[in-house]
Image 1 (cartoon, rainbow, N blue to C red):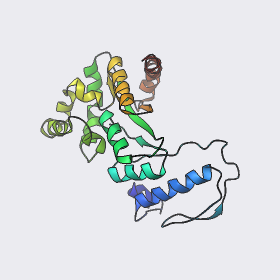
Image 2: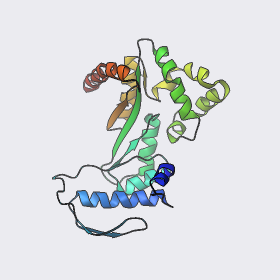
Image 3: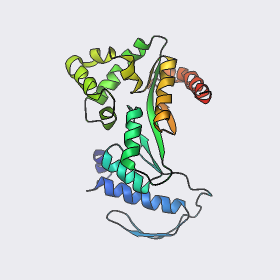
Image 4: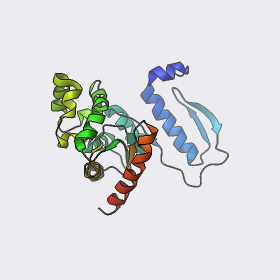
Length: 223
């Protein structure tokens, strides 16, 4: 994050403190308050939204690690968990945030549905390899995290393609339709309020996935 902030001339010595201040004042403004605030990075004097919303929308923090989760629990309405999140990561986020009241957990999840689940695994192996190539709290919370990393370290993408179904269920809506549905239900049971599905980058493929998403939505409602 600091890299692209630097490109805009907005690099901050303390990203976490800056995010906490921004979330704090944004929530105040959305609630229709007149705000004067003098923080480390955010400075406002007598600022008021000309047309505040009738009902303030929730402000969610897109954060990953335990310190930022704790910050979100203090000042945000919830968190957005990035791709690779499974039910273990949802539970870890709620534990680390330790919210005092209502707290929303939204999950971005990769979508890849094929009649043959192994075809979906082949498509997604390079993506998962990317998640495994750098520190990733979502992977750390996977129930088979150590085995996952060892599998990738020893066999690369080829080994990722051969991972057991159970491991894939905790990584995304990947496999058959029923696999994708089970992934979503596992997230819900762990405490996620909603799941946003990432389509394929190719437009033609993404268009075909609309029916998959509609089918999943209908199936979730019957659970």
